[in-house]
Length: 154
Image 1 (spheres, one colour):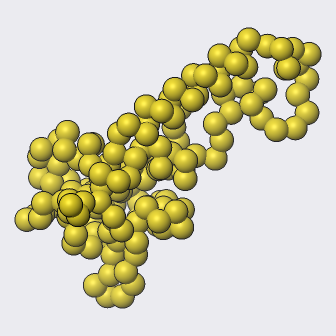
Image 2 (cartoon, rainbow, N blue to C red; image 1 turned 135 degrees about the vertical axis):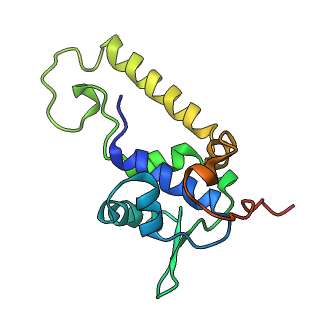
């Protein structure tokens, strides 16, 4: 299984916001940090906003930020929103299936088990885990004087 470019940059966008703490992150800054077009990031921003993974603030000094602690946003949350299909084989897809073994095939069961294991692992990792794994992330992304990321309330 290969994740899309959209998912890859959605995770990166969230990591940038987490590294930037509670300050608003601007799309042009994020685009520059990752060397990707602003238009592409705006496209990614829409499903993330609808899913409540980011919040946007409009206006001249607007931007985006995480609506909750990065430790509460799992990789599964992001993948679920940004990937269109998890069909690993024809038998995962809806509609007419030409294989005569579709209801009794061991491959289907094995692939479903593998996909579920993939999802379970993604649920174990948060955006915060990814940010903390790179102590110099603010420097690497060109974020100056970034405050410490917000911690969940006790």
